Image (cartoon, rainbow, N blue to C red):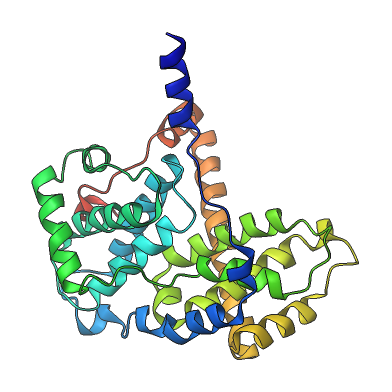
Length: 300
């Protein structure tokens, strides 16, 4: 019995690799990331050029559901951005029907989890999250379809890949709460993934830099006067990444706008439920990840 308990604990506490400081401090690695990042950015506004049946609100609905699944399963921070990258790249190449969009999103999460997780999400579990609107056979078939369409090149560069490299070069004080900034920056990156304009019109390095700027701006009261000012943070990040300063500021402002809109929507939803004395229903709904099994039935 003791052996079984120990085995259970070892499964729960998954061993994860630590960051290699030699790699983080090596400028050649950062230069390589900056060089290849454009290769993994969708080349066009595929809603206008490639997709005939898919609309932006449909993508937002499915990507939001993907985010909920990754959050509920406590996936690594880069699983969700990578899965969205795979989805956008596939949509920029192949026209699909709206009934296939959730199947594509599920497949992309399956692939990203395999690549990034120590214990990846299983196909059976993902099928359950779709409320069985996707079959196991369809998921496994589409895994090969997506891999072939992307030429098996799924180890994409995503914004999260730049976070540690930027932190190590910003010359922050040792007492700086970098872990708090990192968590907020990852949240901004996730918000950016939900809005397709970030994925298509901004490079991963710019999204990462903008997320750090937005996180620092939001935590300025907590970081204190010893922390670099907003203009200093922007200047340091533009020097490190080589992105245009005006574009970086614009990207940061767009992130903050998306956050405000998201918070406003949540506040409005809470008020509506409160006015209807239906708070228990809201809490119950938030305990389960919603599945967009019938996109046509959703009113926007």
